[in-house]
Image (cartoon, rainbow over all chains, first blue to last red; front, side, top):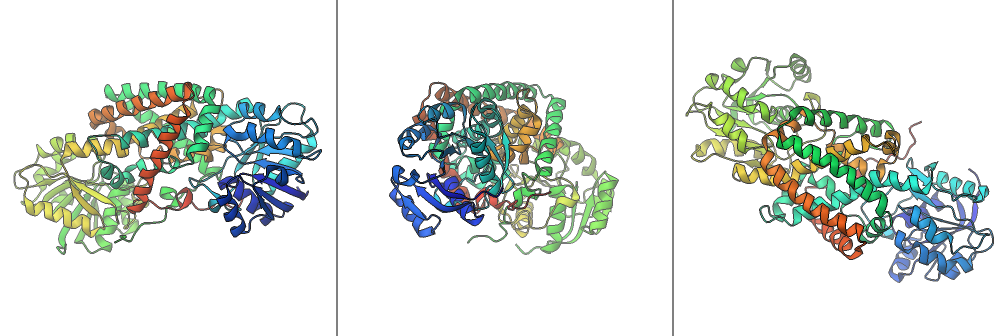
Length: 309
Length: 309
């Protein structure tokens, strides 16, 4: 660590982009933070929050002086945005992103860049269910992993700069190939989101159980799923469209396992159920031990002691 | 409300039983709280915690003076425990339970009781992922629903007593048939637990992604599922064995919806994905509005700002 960038430009000031902007200033990672967003309402919020030195809707104006440009847009838009900004990058400026999918994104963006502009894709594994510039906070990446997937032959100095930037935000950086990243995220993030969206949809469509009953009795487990099923729809649509292969692979395995479990229920095989239900406790212990989760009951949810009436 | 029972006996001092014991005393719902458990280690903890006036392993001794006996054992054990304690109940003593399944449980318990002992099944929809007498707390049921499923013809006074007891613990009481209860809980609790257990199992068994990677990158969504997949294995085995029909019905619908979603991914149907991902946000808003969930990002999880090293 230690390098302070002159200018970092952030394109897309949602939860992640606005958290980076806040963190870059809080942790002194850049002299100047530029915010680029095509949505004037977002830019107004950025100005009101005072989280950037310049807020502009012009990609050309926003990136022209930047040493590091970080794309924080839905993964489906990365290729088009990279194509539009590429001519305006100064020599040596580094392009990076925060997308949850890497394989197809690397291909989409890299083809537009001049050789003197290294592309170093990154993915901070952090977030909340809220969207927009107001939802960000500087400590979002503290003690969270950030995965970097440098294309073959990319400049080592550029990788070091991006690594130092994320370490400056408090993240722990790990490097892997785009293909492996997409498999790991399919099981740790994409398929969990898909089945959460799916069960919330199933519950909404029942005719034997009312929506009001689903809401009332959600404390039995269902409400945990509704949190991730409240995540940004555009971002998640793009994730499933761009990481199709790995998601379908992991979904296939999930389905095989669910079929076996369904069969165990149908045949009353209590031992098979007990064995799985015991085994799954160990993984949570590992997550808590690694500081990736709180050990407090119910995630330490604020106790809802008082009736709201 | 207002009736203070002379003696309440709680059979099974796990998370729920020990929370009832604590609450009965905190909110002054009974002059005397008796704890019955067959596990001497649990009884030692109950004595050390001082949450009961008497702690005994003898069902006969424990229930003989009770006005209300609440079975807090796994649902698969309710029939056998009811059979064993039935001869020792005094006339007019009420039997209740806290089981997550009602249809088969009502049938298993009711047949053993004398006509002068009403059975009023209850199910407080509340809990955490922790088990055992140390994990309970008096406010667990505050502002949570408790579902009562009175069998046809049961004494109205007994239903009123059980209702008042749960309201005294802070719960909101709702009455429904055992069959409807089992359908509602299948979708709001049982199937969510099943798919959480399932995906944690799937992730543990992959050969392309290591367990260490699953743990590291769990903040992308997976860790939410590990909480409920850390719940008590015996309790949940019994739930799936005793609510087989409703669980298989709801699982069938979940699978139909997941097949449609899988097809949308395979064919790149972004509009279908976006439509579902937008619709599911509304249900969470309803849950938060009804005070059944915190609106804080990430459930208000304690911020893990400091690296643990």
